[in-house]
Amino acid sequence: MHSDTPVFLKPHARIEPLILRWLADHHLIPPVHRALKVMRSHLPVLQSFLDQPKRHAEAVRIPALRGGSFVDLPVERAPEVRELIDRTLASPFGPKQLAEAIQALDDRLVSDPGTGIERVYPEVPESLRGLVELYYDTRHRARFRLIEPLLYRSGLYREEEQSLQLSLAQSDERAFGYSTPRLDGPGLLTLDLPFSSPLVEFLTSLRFRPRPLGEVREALRLEGERAGLLETFLTPEGVPASPRYQGPGVRLRYFGHASLLLETKDVAIMVDPTLGYGVSQGEPRSSFAQLPERLDCVFITHAHADHFSVETLLQLRGRTDTVVVPRSSRGNLSDPSLDAMLRAIGFRHVRALDDLETLEFPGGRATAIPFLGEHGDLDILSKASWLLELGGQRVFIGSDASVPEPRLYERLAPLLRDVDAFFYAVEANGAPLSWGNGPLLTQAPNRQMDQTRRQGSATGTQLSGLLELLRPRHYYSYALGLEPWLRHVVATPEHEVKTRLREVEVALETCRRLGIPGERLYGQAELMLGLA
Image 1 (cartoon, rainbow, N blue to C red):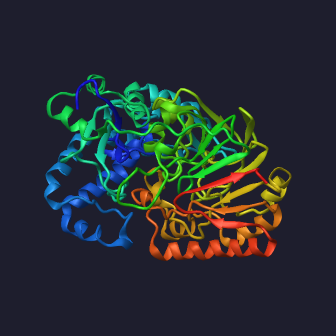
Image 2: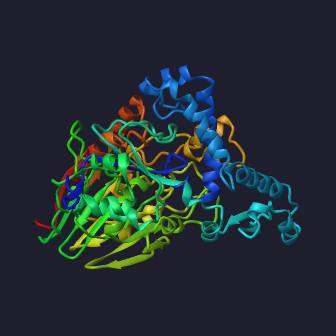
Image 3: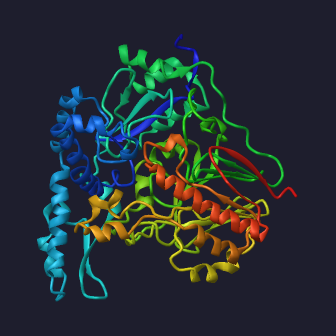
């Protein structure tokens, strides 16, 4: 291709955002959480690989162990893994010191007699001085609160540890993101770019807006072999963004799992975008090419990686006006702020809503609905279901909310009764408490705690109770974690898949009894609301 040839990103060009060569998520972007995750999860699994590489190689071939602590790399790459460990530990303001500081502070506060907190401030570890507030709860137990916006401005936030790795996805298969780092290799192009860099928007805009090849090379400052490698991800034959919907009612397009695009002639809204790529070998799906050039709002229900995909969100940043998130508990170690996190990685317009707060948008409004459970009973507030009112229709996005207290929905019934579309997930069991949260726990749970405090959503019976109470006009079962393009972050054992499908059938049978149209969504779908 010549320098003046207009080029697009290929539909199957995968862009993975990395921090210290690990797939970025909500526990790896914030500085304190990054330190805990690296020291208590990433480095132990890498050391285990070095100690028993053959055991890891055997385990990653067993489907039932997918999602476990096994590195999916060939044994001969052990020297690169050792180098990654050494490089991580040598990082300025390294994770080891910060993780130890958090544990030391928590241990000190546990023993505090409750007789005055000011005298404790001089004992705060040096790396955390001026970055935490100490306080007593109403039982006079000493606690600490992270001042998160200030942490992102401190030397503890290391943008130079961030990068993007490009690859060509021939299928949806890739190593599990929580147990396998992304090393360099043939056909891979790693760009040392902070996530907040305008070049991220420049690069991802090539999905729908072509630019001359020479301009792309110059912007990314690539020469020689790396410039040649870049061309393998580009093509002169692209697809412009999908035209903005101009029809009547609401067009609702399902992009798989929990990803929904709602459009009227006034507005385009996306919820929990976790998009697959346009691979040649794989199940049919909608992807970036099916999105409009501009999204007025992106709504996030909670921070789990199958709903809050940093990989997808970064690629939507340049075409998104506002991201709307649930407000966090402000500095709680178990509940990092999505608002502060998104601002740190370059999103300029972020709104955080409390329970029952509303946000007006063109032709409608959104209300944050209380979301109970699903997080191992931890004090996590950054979660919300959404009631979206647009185009004369009311759509409830229940996401993965559990139903430990049905009386909540009795009180919410005046808001939620008779909605036109009711989206709600089913997950009877869920992962144990420590899965994902383990590195943040300053005291390890015993086995009974770990196994009984599950991260599940509603059961079929609980959901049936909601359907009886709220009588929606249409029920959609979604977010079952079955789409193949999510397997790098969702590991659902086969027996759990069967359990979920049985629970869905319980809810659908209730729909049939009540005369409510109901269906289970998978992969992709287009639904029209308000045309009857």
